[in-house]
Length: 230
Length: 80
Image 1: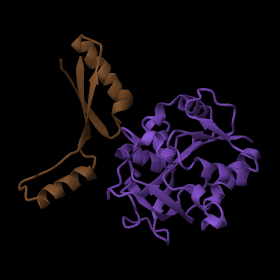
Image 2 (image 1 turned 90 degrees about the horizontal axis):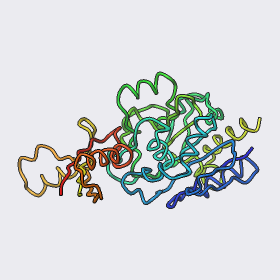
Image 3 (image 1 turned 120 degrees about the horizontal axis):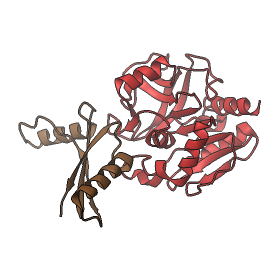
Image 4 (image 1 turned 30 degrees about the vertical axis):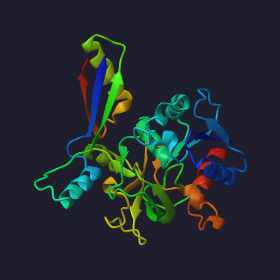
């Protein structure tokens, strides 16, 4: 199984994802530069976190139009799993691979801390390592993570099981107090209609081994790598 | 030909930066500020000299890159 991590100018979690994939996959991921219009055949694409193009205009707006993203969109349409983390989620929304938009945090502050997430859909290639309703801990680090979409889109996401993660309290209660950034309906991660594209603001790669302070993120990389290797 | 693009959050989309500015204006003693919405202003110099074509180009730029139409509206002014 082969994986690729997309690298934009300003990506800063690309190497963290590389380490996590290397551990779960036992193979070296390809690091794909944003300016490369050609992308070798891979079984998994990760769009990592960071501040691509300095967040100029809007977070993810410039990166969404970079040459490699045309290829990422084509692969996603062909069913290749694509995982967008933090800035990667913003890029996928800006590129139209996921609905909605990520706005400035409601509190206007950059938030960098661990949050609790409730796994809403554990029947995806990314989340099958978790149980539905399980509460996991992952870090967030963003200024623009306030997920927004119109009511019809939010209803569709919920009705079709396309909300993968929600911000919650330690006991799993989805409350306003547990919502760090003002996201509509506490949404932390969503899937596309086909279920092969996941965008999420929290960083699974930052808690993917014990030395980092936790392993809740490891289950995601283990699950997707195992599913693709099978 | 210069085109001027104004980008604002759609009506109904919460604008926390606008709210913060409003609170700051209140704090400075400016009375009667009923609302503040923050947006972006972009000036573009186009080689095009036909105003209708310049507008069409600028609107295409807005739809594809300058605005995120999920949350933002845009207005194009075509000038000299």
